[in-house]
Image (tube, rainbow, N blue to C red):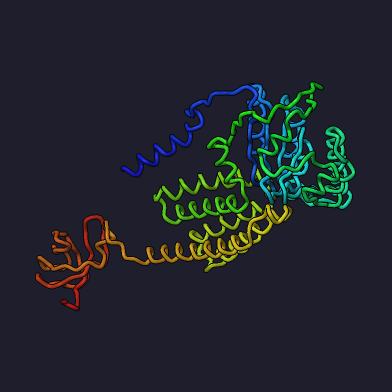
Amino acid sequence: MKFKKILIWALLLFLLGPLCSFSQPQETGSVYLLRVEGPIVPVVANYIKAGIREAAENRAQCVLIELSTPGGLYHTTQDIVSAILNSPVPVVVYVAPAGAWAGSAGTFITIAAHVAAMAPGSRIGAAHPVPAGGSEMSPTMEKKVAQDAAAWVRSISHMRGRNPEEAEKAVLESKSFTDHEALENRLVDLVASSREDLLRELQDRNVVLADKREVKLNTAGAPIRKYPMNPLQRFLFKISEPNIAYLLLTLGGIGLMAELYHPGAIFPGVAGSISLLLGLYAMGSLDAQFGGVLLVLLGLGLLAGEAFVTTHGVLALGGIIAFILGSLMLFSDKPPSLRVSPWTIGWTSAFLAGFVIFLIAAVIKGQRRRVVTGKEGLIGSKGVAITSLNPEGFVFVEGERWKAVSEEPVIAGDPVVVVEVEDLLLKVKPRKNKN
């Protein structure tokens, strides 16, 4: 009971946390600091748009996005770039910390900024688009998509006064640039070793907003207001990571299987349903291949079906094969940094197979166990004849007096064994072994 109360309070705090958070005092002219570290997924777009909106409402100097990403979803990137291009406040994108990477989607986001900066040792580029949802494309269609992305990055570069030819190479040739190469090729505006250096470099820089207003930045002594993701956004961002999304989907299947194999357990079914839905949400956010998701779900379904259909392991074997194939297909169209680790797939498949074997063994063991309750529980019970049975009489079984019938004559005091139960009448026979 105590554990249930703690769990309920924890859920309430998690769900109501964002609503009950205390508002911080706003400072006009501050720098709004946003941090994006990981794949570009829908929750990141919502986070950036919310940060820009609040910065505009509080008349901030600018929005500073510290970025480190291997890439992400093309349509989400378009959403973020559109928000930056139409932002009513200046947006600065800083590829940081040292060694960070603005790959693929990060390249478009960086080039779209009013001011683009990089930390020493960071890199940018490799922005060739991949088909959304894992759909197969003909060479002609793939060329069209790449050319459209190239035209888009050229358009953004012209708008921001950057080098469209080199930006195009990042798309068509998947070219990458170091911080110094990006600066020399006018893909970024400056290289800064720290956030403080960046803010000093931004001092008195003029930027032109979407409404053609020219704004002079005054960032040297401006207060920094950190704008982190709220608890719900952080949670959704964490599960929108391929390995975590995959594990949630698998755990959901395991929980539902446990509930099917042992009806009435309740907790595995509830936890499994929640995990499965969260896993499906994350798979959708990551544009996982639809065929891969269906194969994984089919594999889990076949494994669950082994409990109800006697196939001597055929369904279980088919389920494991379907599960592995689906796991490999999920993100096969994505860069290696956005795929499920092969080790995760291997260990998860092995655990799933072992778990199913354990459940099947438990079910078989339970089916073979003699029933010990109800009428069936009396079958095989030993007793003593109270009266002679020829063929009817009374016996003493399991501490109670029963009316009984026997096809063979039984003398009072002889041992008997129950062979059948009909309502309140026991069918017995003499017990040869009197021990």
